[in-house]
Length: 124
Image 1: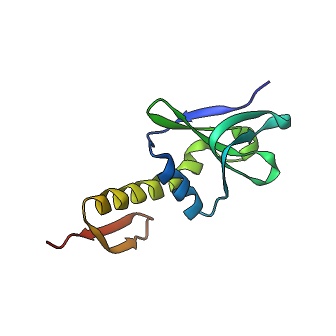
Image 2: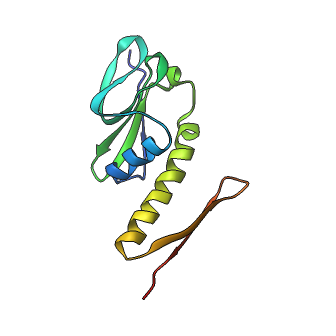
């Protein structure tokens, strides 16, 4: 019996997600099997290998990405896993979009509550 659960994400850029995962210290495999309960697997575009054989995968479905994992074995909820990924992803998309429009990062600060403040500027 499969224990894999999928979670629809509002993340769309696979390259930014891969960079985000690597910045957070994860090792990312491309187009690989996501391992779950009793050796069951499912395919994903990006796979974060985890100790114990319970991986986390991300795959494209239409215009968005979804996360797939056997959360019984991962030992954490999807929301708990996604919180730092979403925050770093949003930061990375902001910086990439700003750079494409000629902006540069002036400063970046993380507040006591974990919020990120990025100041960008463009010189004419």
